[in-house]
Length: 144
Image (cartoon, rainbow, N blue to C red; front, side, top):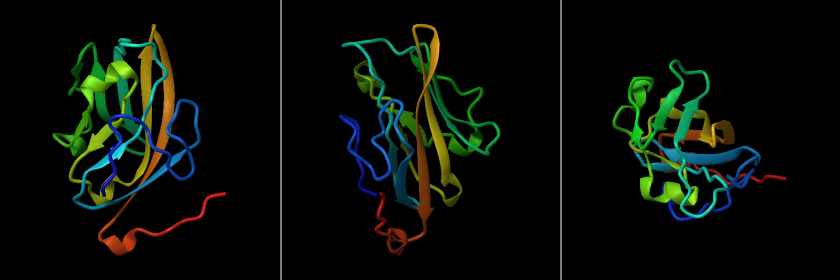
C-alpha cells in the first residue's frame, strides 16, 4: 500500500487520525508496509517520553513501546519483532505514527496509540487495519 504519513497526517475515511478523533480505517495488502497514523498536539520541539502502540485481542498487546528515548522490547509481542518502528525524528513535532513492515493477515485488527506527556497517559487514537491477500481486496467504501 502506498501510504506515507511521516510529515503530516492525511485524512482517512472514518476519521482524521488526530487526538480524540474517530476510528481511522486503513487497508493493506499482505507483505506491504503500512503507516498507522498518530499525531499528538505538542509544543514546538516537545519531548514525548513514551509512545505505546497496542493491538486489541492480542497478548501481550504491545506492538511497539518507546520509553525515555529508545524502543523497549521486553513487553513487545514477538509477532511484531523487527517489523515496527516510529519516525523518531518526527516525534518532537508530534508524529507518533507507526510503520508496520511485511504486513501479515494476522495483523488485521484495532490498534491504539497512547502517549505519556507531563506524567499523564493519553490515548491519542484508534486505527482499524484490514489486511487482504491481493489488490482485489481493496474496495471503495462510502462513509457517512
